[in-house]
Image (cartoon, rainbow, N blue to C red; front, side, top):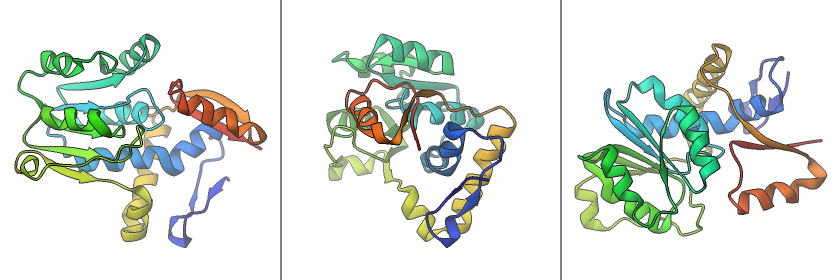
Amino acid sequence: MALRWVSPAGVMAIPDDADAGEATMMSLTAPLALRVLEAGRIPPGGTVLIQSAAGTIGHLAVQLARSYDPKTIIGTASSREKLDFIRDLGAEPVDLTDSDWPAQVRSLSPDGVDTVLDAVGGTVFAQGLELVKPLGTMVSYGAITTEVPTVPVLGIQLPSPTGVSFYGWQQARPDEARADITEVIRRWQTGKLRPVVHATHPLADVARIHETLDARANLGRLIAVP
């Protein structure tokens, strides 16, 4: 079995029949997507907006979001290929390159959204914050733009902002973090969760992975193998 070391409490066995893309998904990216969704407190029949929905975490979050029985899953992306990709995953696509992309979201959910999952940061985070319903939830788990999100004090009175770090979760709640890994393995085994691998490169060519990530050109996961 393949093993991934995080801490003695974080070592988990991965099923023998999992390939490299599936194994790496189970150990980190899918548990993170699940934890972000849990933090988002999506109500049954609610609406969730997933930023960067075609990416490494986002495309898994779209799949996992179905289990919360939402009325609408909205996903943003920055190219026609990505928009088609997230539509095929089951999300309503919104073009993030449109300067008025929030209007697209409002057309799908006129009263606002219950939950936003954001790994973009910067202006996109601020615009997403304005789309959240009162008493909704804004979850930050990264900053692709390198602009770390900031929340105006007055904004806290409306949606509830929170952040997620899976490494922090493993350290603070190791048993629950292991349970998250067990759960995503279960969903993979039942066919409800599948990673999409954009490309696989030898570890020696890892620079090509970073180039693809920097260009934000990947659909799903990028894998490096020995």
